[in-house]
Figure 1 (cartoon, rainbow, N blue to C red):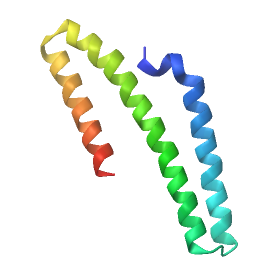
Figure 2: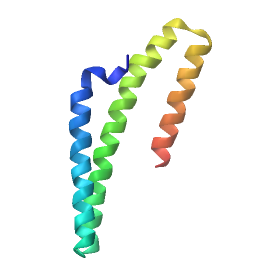
Figure 3: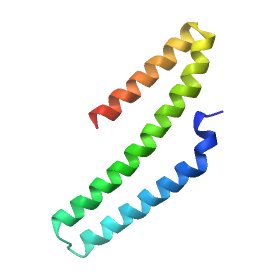
Length: 93
């Protein structure tokens, strides 16, 4: 079971909102809207997706990694490596 299962509806709501924002940005580009206005919307969508990513990461750490840590061994080490790599990807983006 995924750690986000308790928050799945909220995640989907946030993702649908971000999807709508992206469609709005596409429309802005099609209508030749001022660059700064488009960049403002891109920033808003980026923040929305970062919020989803951080919530997923939090759920992963508190559920998947915590559970694996209790088991110990190679499974725990792999989950910690996965989480570390995910954090690194988020920081780089």
